[in-house]
Each structure stands twice: as C-alpha cells, then as structure tokens.
Length: 111
Length: 113
Image 1 (cartoon, chains in turn green, blue):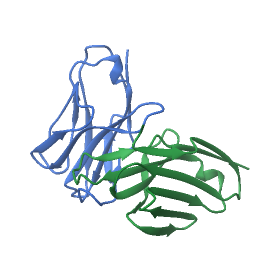
Image 2 (cartoon, helix red, strand yellow):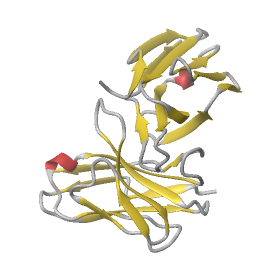
Image 3 (cartoon, rainbow over the protein chains, first blue to last red):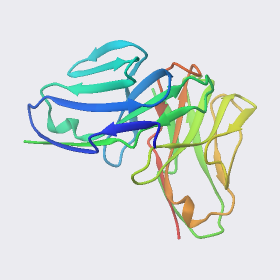
Image 4 (cartoon, rainbow over the protein chains, first blue to last red):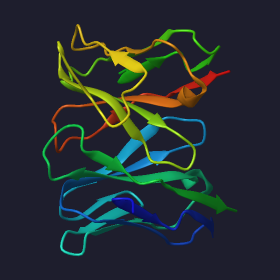
C-alpha cells in the first residue's frame, strides 16, 4: 500500500464547477505539499501546510492531521486549471529524503 | 529570477553511454534534490544534498552519481545508461529540510535506446 493515496486518479469537469481532490496518508507527517504539473511542463508548488487551511485565489487547501487527510479545492474551475495535481508529504523522520509523493490526479476542465 | 534551471530538456542516449544532467539554482538554497518521474508513479528521490560538499542517497540511487561543489550546482551523472533509466528527471531545491516551499526545475526527458 502506498503511503500517500490520491483520489480520484482522473477528473473531468466543466468550466465553473467546484472541484475537490483528496489526499490520504498512512503515517505521521510534518508537512504536506500540493503541487501542480502542466502537460509537458515543470512542477510548481501551490501550498505547503501542516495544519488548518490555506487559500490562494481560487485554490483552497485543507488538512486534518488527526484523520491523515488533505483536500485541494478549486472554485469556479477554468480550462487553464487543467493539470496534474500532486500531493507530497514530509514523513515524521525529519530527514530530507523522506518526502513521499502521491501518483497525482489528472484534471481536465472543459468549456 | 531564474529559480531552478535544468539542462538539457530532452536527450536520447544509447545503452552504455554516459551523460550529465545539469541543475543550477540562484536562490542560495542549501537543500537540493534529484527526482525521477515514471508514468503512473509518484516522484522517486534519487539523491539529495544538504549543502556544498554533502550528498546522500535517496530511494533509487543505483546507476547515478552526484556532486555538490558549490551551493548553486547539483549535477546528476548517468555512467552507463540503461533502458530502465528512461524517465523524466526533476531537480528541486528548498531552504529548509522539513518545512519549506519546494522549487522545481522544468524537467529533463531522457530516453535510453
């Protein structure tokens, strides 16, 4: 079983829809990252959080440490949001090597 | 503001050839990482460095070598390329070991035939 599980694997939405991507992890963590990867492009950090909630524009990230779960929400989705969204966690070992990645959620937003 | 710069973006190698992927960051970050991304898999750590002169193995180091002679540069060397090393490689950096925003390069797509 992967230490980081994302759902869904693939998601298609129409422009304007509210989108939720989920990330569950199985062990204690120090922090969690949400990353965005556009087709053929690099990876950009969206959020880093260790508790509560963060908001940036139309993106909202939440984390529940007790339930070992995080969600990424996109409000009023737009075709330019089409990308792969990756969850990554810093495990509680405290070493630089222990950053574990999910396999990503591929989002397609259509007109 | 360059951030993390990787070269080359694309490369085709023959089995047994060698090459170096270059990675440079201009943010004075201590921590640098090399990851590989295979289809359907999460990124896997190859090597990392916590500062100039210090490197360590990640999850999948076999077939690779690194060096960190300066804070800015963290090249990844493939000595005897194998088809299993066909992948997309990402260099990344951050300021703090545990909690710090990650900055990634654009990626290098390597094919070994």
